[in-house]
Length: 164
Image (tube, rainbow, N blue to C red; front, side, top):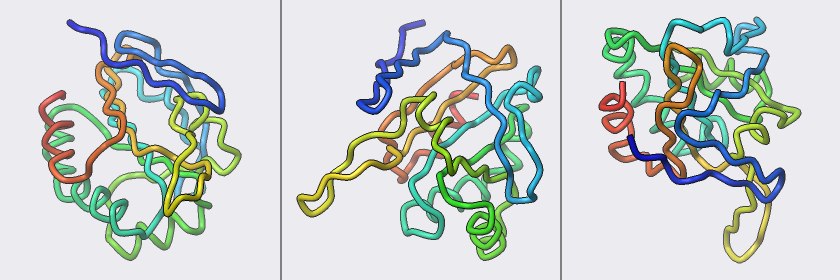
């Protein structure tokens, strides 16, 4: 299997590749429960990082995962969405769009930095730091099976499903 392109971040210069152990984490969910990646050993995990709750691209991406949730479950996987939004923001976003998977809050940015998705971005000529929309498919052994950097929302669900 070919190695995926390296993901790097100016903030922390993290580089994760296919075959690497996925960095473990503990984050608060929209249900205010602590979720540890390592507790899903033996299951496949679709770990997707998105910039902001209730924005057009992020809503479209979340709703595509919501609509395909049962198919992802049939492939033996779960979905975890991560952004730097608060637990309260996640609760509202999840309720508004009837999302059927957990949203995790990384307010202190430890996980987005560990995965190399906290990057310098530019909009209207202004530079700022934010999450680069990225999805990782993690296998049953906790290793990265596939990384999708700079995700284009259209058709992304189908790409992820094909990797499971």
